[in-house]
Length: 274
Ligand code: SF4
Image (cartoon, rainbow, N blue to C red; front, side):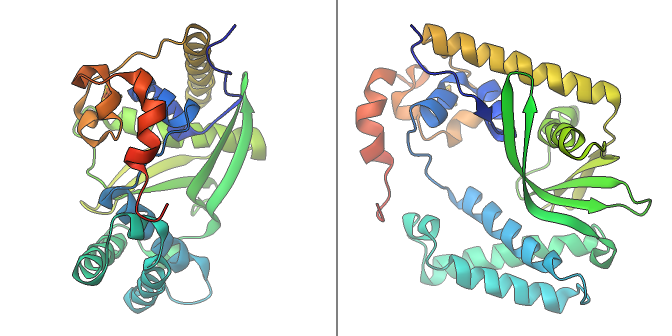
């Protein structure tokens, strides 16, 4: 008998999460342990929301004044957001985060002409069967490029990858290209990562080969998850990401005991609002 039921749905971020560290994937996705927000994740969510509002109305000029208004609307929405309350942000600390969001969102003006963006969908939910699993996710921005073809854009508020790591960073958007191809019967012509902090854009062009590779990759990752679910063995993968991992206290790499996580983590990681 399997130690865990094998998931029948995955998101692109869960695929990446298993590849980054199978044990953290187990804690988060199979044990259902809380995954508490950080300032960085909240900042990312807030900037995404501001840019969603910004591009939602294409009938008006998308200029700095309009962006300012969208950021202000977003900041009101997030003032009492559970993640804001969890992190105890109010007064000066919320003002500080607000300034960071304003600066990051404004980065788009140095990266593209927003009036030339023609969205087909913003924060678009998409679902597609890929091999043995159903992939579900949310595309930040799906648009028609100048030649009418589909372009997928993913906003990033963190640091751009160093030289040689761009391909790895593009894995998620290539999965979205595969999902578009399967559900819309149309292969996107371009996938883009917009790093609004450093104002760098990384692009790639999906091909028949990349779609085939992504299909095989999903099947391979799902097969590895299935094996781990059956055996109950989820390996650790120590990396620079460990310093952001909420599950360190139960990770054997840091002297923790994973068998105690289910009993201890829900209380330890629950915020002041729960
Ligand atoms: S601390 Fe690192 S190795 Fe341990 S569970 Fe988290 S990501 Fe994995």
